[in-house]
Structure formats: structure tokens, C-alpha cells
Amino acid sequence: MSGSTSIDLIAAGAIRSGALAGYIDMRDDILPEAQAQLDELAAQLALALSEETVESTDATVGAATGYDIDTAEMVAGNTISLSYTVGGVQQNVTIVRVDDPSVLPLSDTVTAATGDTVAGINFNQPMAGIIADLQAALPGDVVVSNPSGDTIRFLDDGAVGNSDINAVSATVTPSALSGGGTGLPLFTDGANGTIFSNSLDGGGQKTGFASRITVNAALIADDTKLVSYDTDVPMGDTTRPLDLLARLTTNTRAYAPETGIGGSSTPFNGTIDEFARRIVSFQASQSANAARDAEAQQVVTSSLQDRFDAETGVNIDDEMSNLLLLQNAYSANARVMTTIQELFTVLMSI
Image (cartoon, rainbow, N blue to C red; front, side, top):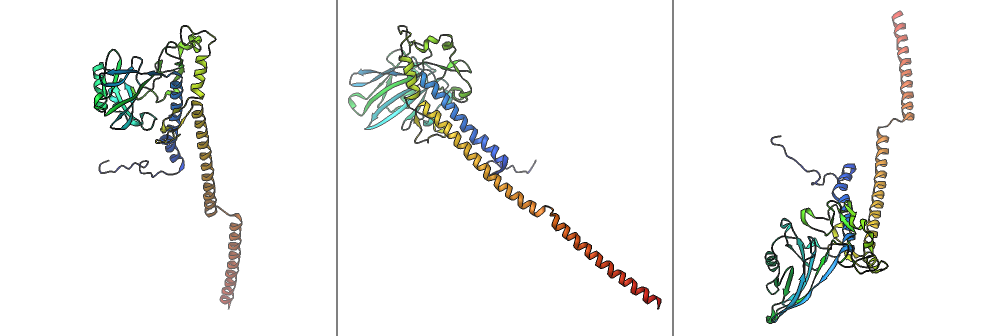
């Protein structure tokens, strides 16, 4: 309507109580947080069982030293961890592979780790472009090159002596059931049957993953791969089963703070088992708090209802008393009128 003014009551915080406020709180806070917890648990479960670390190899060019890292197994969402020192200050950089450049640049909160800088790099381009983007994301004293194939080389500044490359490694999620280490891609993304790699493309693979996580169909077809992680591994070998158990109950991981478990500066670190228990404990506490708040609200509602009934309700005793007063008053008035009538009759008869 012309000349009208719209007001967002929710944004203004005008709805603070009642069922409507409860529904808004569920929609905007409680349910998204619960979904984030389940998605994080599903994502970390899939990654914990499947991830493998690719170690770097020493590299030397003249006076410059550093490391080569093979990126052939990297897919969207996989990372390279780079530690270097420039001017006496150590820096940790997490390089995240993306295949959709529209999601760039990435925030440092993409990883749950603290103290690192996140650099998103588009790998869906020729290697020359990848190297150029990496060099642009790093200081000039860290020299990036491509010696051959899918290998990326990180070198210090050589004789200048202002920088050092401390460590380089990659974290990948192999799709094969064997030949890639003792890890196992036990779960896949039910949306397309691909291995979960925490890809950030297309809005992020983690969003809604708790509802899509499925057991790898290839593993269902060949369950011997629960034990056999390579061609020469005998069926009685316990290496892979014990490693998978350790990944769930011993190895610790950092979890995203948007789950409400841990903070942005101190994210929760623990095993998959511990994180799952934290979620159950968190939701039990939320449920208890909600029940307590509902009980307190019910007490207030009952008190207000009692006061309302006291003011507006009908008290039979009071009404009967008033009726008796009216009846007595009517009887008294009737006697007065009778007396007056008799007086007039006497006067008129004289």
C-alpha cells in the first residue's frame, strides 16, 4: 500500500515469548545447531576412516631447500598443510583444493584448526595457473614451482636466508578400497555415490550430509576389503581393523565451532566417540533446559489464569448474598408502599 511502512517484528525482537517465539527460536537457532552437529559428526566419521596423509620429499635447487608434494590423489576438499618461517616468524597455511572458483576466497574458519591461515586454490585449471595462484597467496620468500606432473615444490629463498620451509604434507581421501593405505572409504555421499571429501563446491558437501551418508556400495559387494588393504595382505591380518578402531576411539580431531560444542578460539578436540558423546550430552542438557523453562512458564500462566478468573468469574456465595439483599430490600419497599397506600385510603375517606 502506498505510503505504508513495513516492520520486521522478528528482526526487531518484538516477539519474545509464547508459541510463536518458540517456533522462531527453533527455526533460527535450535534446529540449525542440531543439524550442524549431526552433519559434523557424519562428516568427521567419514573423514576419520578414509583420510590418508601424503608425506613430502626433500627438494633442493642450488642453495634453496624445501619439499615436493604429490597432489595426484587430491580431490576437492583435500588440503595441503604448509609451515614456513619468514623473517623469524612461523606461519601455518592450510591450502584447500576447490574446483569451483566461485566459492573463493575462503575464510580462515573453513578449518577448525586455530592459528592457521586458509588459502583456497582453484585446482580445476592447468598446473601453471595453480602455481600462479599459490605464489600469489604466499609471500615472495616462499617460492612455488611445478617440477613435473602433479608435483608442487615449495622452496625457501636460498642464500638470502630470510625464509625456511619447515614442513609440507597433504591430506587426501582415496576412493579405492585397497592400495591407498589402511584407511577405508567406508561411507559415501548418497546424493551421487562419491567419496566424502568435505568439498566446498556447490554450497559445501557437509551441509545435510547426515541425511545422505551411506555405506560404500563397493564395500558391500566385497566385504573382504574390511581386512585386505593391499594385494598381499592375508585374510587374518588385523592391521586395517585395528587402525580403523584407533581412528574412532584414539585419534583426536578438531571439530567445527558452529556446532555449539567448543568455541571459535578453542574448538573441541577429541575422538569421534568423544564428540558423539558430547552431542548426546549437549542435546540432553538442551532438552532439560527446555522442560524447565516450559514448567516455569506454565506456573506463570496458571497464576495469571487464577487472577483472571478471580476478577472475571462468578462467585455463587457472593451472588446469593446479593440476591438476598435485593429480596429484603424489595420486601421492605413493598411494605412502605403498602403503608403509604393505606394512608392515602384513610385520608381520602375522611
